[in-house]
Image (cartoon, rainbow, N blue to C red; front, side):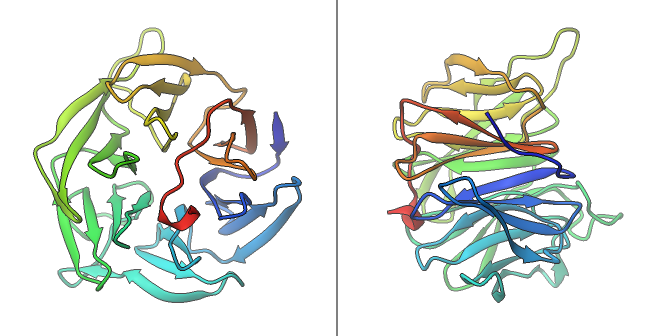
Length: 273
């Protein structure tokens, strides 16, 4: 179902504890809110091209500002603090997506989309911002790390690169420490294409991954087996579970926000419990 339309480029959906969903319109520099009744409102203006968002345990909305940092916003939409501002003295390229673990640490991707050239960080990477503010670079060998999410047990970090078909999984040895990556699955490709990656993704209570791609939402179980593809009228960029029972999939797809009713609930990270 097309819930709302007329946007420039939608991204970064996140549900709060009540199931209201917040999402970004990146070029418009806005973060919008759709409540569980479907009513639309503006949560934040001048969002510094915020992309991915997620609520933390304190109820703050943490956002990846593509202008080079991660910030936390309070319930009024005002930025209250910087979660990750610099690494080795330089701003980030253009933070894209994030996931917050149970310890309060934030894993986030920093590819090159919307970044200045030369890249402020010199590489595209995945970082961890610890609860004490210390930032560590964890992965620097992926061309365009984009979507990122944890498994429900938080023992695996999934990274979705957008310029390769292979989706990656990394064992979480402890919060902020990863083991050697492996290929989790290879995305189905549009006819005649190869090397097309994914964008954002979400996870349900069983650990199934919903990865946005040129073909729609590609759904994989935790063993990496393709369960099916959810097709949409527009190409999806990201998705999250919302609604009062977390059984509605909210999908940001180009100019619109779509909803897909599901039989399974989305996994609620620390911020949603």
